[in-house]
Length: 162
Image: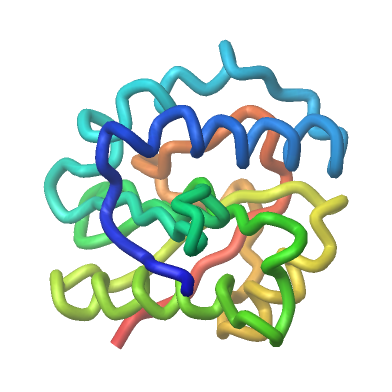
């Protein structure tokens, strides 16, 4: 059984064990753990204001998925750390969609009007997933000044939340 809950400190190592191999080995994104100090300070970075961080765990309590929101003014959120373990991707489990649905519901419930995100072109399945979920591409020059941009990101998206 898959469980999705808000981040708890006992998830920290499991999150790192999920995210780093996906970034570095599977998709060869040039990013290290040192480039992501937020993974050690999730409550301070993500669980502030109207932001949050969710963790999906397997029946064995292994971290198999994550999604996070960082609030930025006015009434906007940056989508971050959306990762799903390879064996849980796709329609069989629908885990990525469940995580996205939780984040969207959170935005609606908390009065956030839009979700912005950055990614890299080589994450083709993620790009298709965002587009399928109603995210529109936006030029880097059109990003809000307040958007917390990651250095590796070169593709950007926005979705209006109703």
